[in-house]
Amino acid sequence: MKRQNQTMLQGPLFPNIIAYTVPIILTSLLQLLFNAADLIVVGRFCGSVSVAAVGATGAITNLIINFFIGLSVGAGVTVAHALGSREDDVVHCTVHTAYPTALFSGVFLTAVGVSLSETFLRWMGTPDTVLPLSAVYMKIYFAGITFTMVYNFCAAILRAAGDTKSPLVFLTFAGAVNVVLNVIFVTVLHMNVAGVALATTVSQGISAVLVTIALMRRRDACKLELRKMKFYGPQLKKILRIGMPAGIQGSLFSISNVLIQSSVNSFGDVLMSGNAASGNIEGFVYVSLNAFQQTAVNFVGQNAGARQYRRVYRTLWICLGCVTVVGLTLGNLAYALGPKLLSIYITDSQEAISYGMIRLGFICLPYFLCGLMDVTTGALRGMGASFVPMVICILGVCVFRIGWIYTIFQIPKFHTPQCLYFSYTVSWIITFLCQMAAFLIVYRRQAKEEPLVSH
Image 1: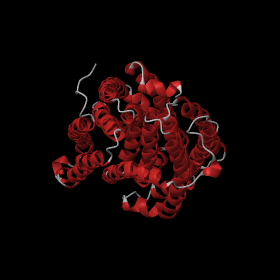
Image 2 (image 1 turned 90 degrees about the vertical axis):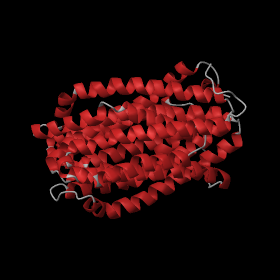
Image 3 (image 1 turned 180 degrees about the horizontal axis):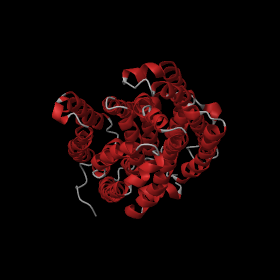
């Protein structure tokens, strides 16, 4: 077994977790920069309406693609389990099942996204001043969504095998290309939101090609051979068993965000602009927290596969501690620098910046709670229990937020952006507590022969 796998199964956990997580954080930040570059360029050269147009697409695109992103989680966990139990044949079959699954997912999403973009945006109540630009952005984005699927599936496999550095290198290059193309398409060719969407698509295509080549050049069981691609039944079933609940959870999670975006839209394009810019800033905090969820999935996955349950338990608590420190630090930093950061995106509306600060205060400051929720969810998935966290998240996040929107938020004195954003914090607390209880139950069930202690 290669040393990169041994760091998950052997040796001190804390330094190995940090070394594994930092490249994921940097990779996620670069991936988020794709969208940040879109907003910054259109904000500076096209105005706040264009910022609102790009921002209005986020919730609906996430709703559509999150189910298939969940399947990539299933592929990663299946590989991690097989690596932990040293079943190279299972790893081989999983890799060659995951790649065609990514291709099929991308083609399906392109058909749906391109043909129904305007319909989805109208369902969300997108204002007529914003809708045409939003529709153009969505159509171009979905035209290249296969690249995104391929990248996510391949990156999940590499991370399950302990390689978090290759995706970082690939996205560094692709991100640089994205920024350059953004400037060319918008300032030279005057393509507005179509230009930033096209730049993102080209950049995702580059990252997809590079991550595919990385798998093809591996010398272990994760090596990809395109001629051997097929749907292997047992591996496909496990990918679906673990990935479908994760995907359903992600999609339903996005439904509540779509409803919140629709509620935001009801306040007009000025608040939409501030909300979009703030959401993008928060994204940098979120991906830093979510990296610990990915770490928990793979460290727990390999150690559960190797039946090293003490390391499973310790992994969870180390990740919870790390995500709390990172969340409190970055959340407070983002809020403190909020006015300056928002002014990067918005140059023509002080009112929009004020609305952005409201959102930062209600979401960024307590964001560590979201990190706690995600890490515990990741640990459950790493142990193969994907259905349980799905149900908890559906009830604790989706149902709760939807109920909040249709009850408390409808009361005239509570019909404010502040009340809308506060639903996030409450849902994070409820869901984390339930996920933690579920983890302890699943852990005790799987590790009956070992005491629940940390060494």
